[in-house]
Length: 154
Image 1: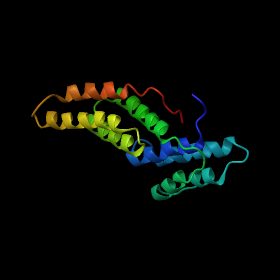
Image 2: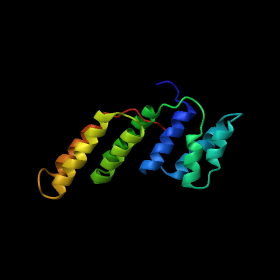
Image 3: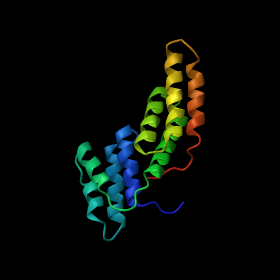
Image 4: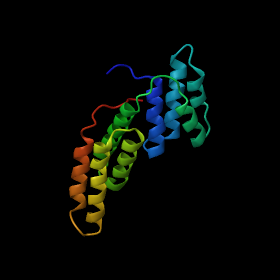
């Protein structure tokens, strides 16, 4: 994988914050590490590192210049969800909803969205006792997320 741009990494944090996958501190830590590692960091990264709240950091992450590959950022976020789900498979509903939001926010396409939407629908039916099982939904989610093996290492 070629080196991702700061704009793509900023998109990872922007959409990850919106979906509740990453924290404000993780985004600030990334920006601080970029500032520390580069002799002449651009002011947009410095602005992210100095941001004080969620609205401000979202604005600053969105303003990071460069080529922004939001679909790659979305795949990284789905990989992060895959890792989280692998270590704690009890949060089927939350992770399914986060995956749906990521696919919409990062323009991954209708097919990807409907995979997670279908799991969400099946989960609702299973929880109400109408059809299927939560375990079956857990298995479907695990299978859907396993397609996202490429991740971003902050």
